[in-house]
Length: 170
Length: 186
Image 1 (cartoon, chains in turn orange, brown):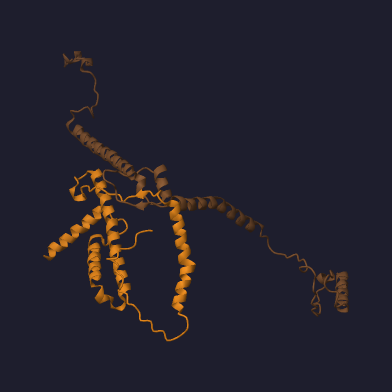
Image 2: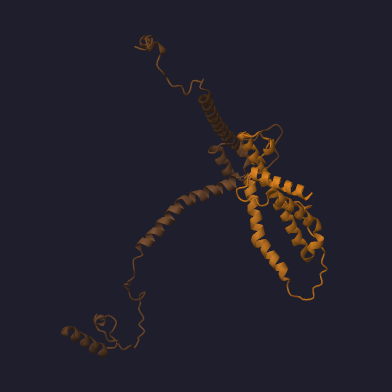
C-alpha cells in the first residue's frame, strides 16, 4: 500500500471515547451507513487492490528522484559566456519550481491545520500561520511580479532594485 | 376546375353520409371540408397503422455519427485494453533512494511503465538534450565572435592599408615607358 502521510506534520486531534447513553431503541443511522459503505465500497476496493498486488508482487521496478549538481550562478559567469548563462538559467528555473512546491506544501499544512482546529484556528495554529506568512513574504519578494516570462536575469535585476531600495532607506 | 369542385362536394357528401368508413378514403385528401369528428377508438390486432412519416433526411447525420463511433472505438478498445493490462500486470514503480555508486538510466526517473517505455524507446535523455542545447549555444557564440572579429579586422585593414584586404591592383612598373620622359620639353 502507498505510504501514509506524516503523522507529526498532520497530527490527528485527540480522540475522546464517547459514553454510550442511548435513550432510544431505534437503530443508529450512523452505524448503518458506515456498515453499508464498508460492505459496498471499502471491501470490494480493498479486495481488488489485494488481488492486483498479488499479481504484481516481487516484480516491482524503482524510480528515483534526479539529483542535479550545482553550477555557477549568473553572477559568477563571465560576460559573454553564453553556455554559462544557459546553465545558470536552467538551475534558476529548477530552483523556481522547487520554491513553488515549498510554498504549496506550507499552504497545505496551514489548510490542514485550519480544518483540524475549526473556529479557533487563529490561536491554535499560530506556528503554521507564522511559517506561511514568512515563506510567502520571502517568495513574493524574490519571485513576486516576474510574470510568465520570468528568467534568471529578471530575478537578478529585481534583487538589484531591492538592494538599492534598502540602501536608500538606510 | 368545375370538375374539382364537383369532386370536392361529392367527397364532402359521402363523408357526411358514412361517418364510420373514414379511415382509408382517398377522397379525404381531396376534400377541404373538415370531417365531422366522431372519434371511434379502433383496436388493431397489429402494432397500429403503418404511417409514412414525412421528415427531412437523417441519412447523412446518422452515417456521420456511425462512422465517428466506429473509428473512435476501433482505436479506443485496443488502447483501453493495453492500458488496463499494463496497469494490472506490470504496475507502477516505487520510489527508492539512489543506491551508492549507481547511475540510474534516464527512463528510471519516471513512475508509470508506459512513460518509462516512451522515454526509453523514443526520447533522448534530458542530459543529452541539455548537452545538445549547450553545443548549439557554443556554435552560435563562436559564430558571433568570428563575425565581430571580421568587422574589426576590416576596419583595421581599411585604415592602415598594409593588409591583404582592400588592395587595388595597379599596373606593373616595368611596363611604364620612360623614354618620352627623358626629353621633357620636346
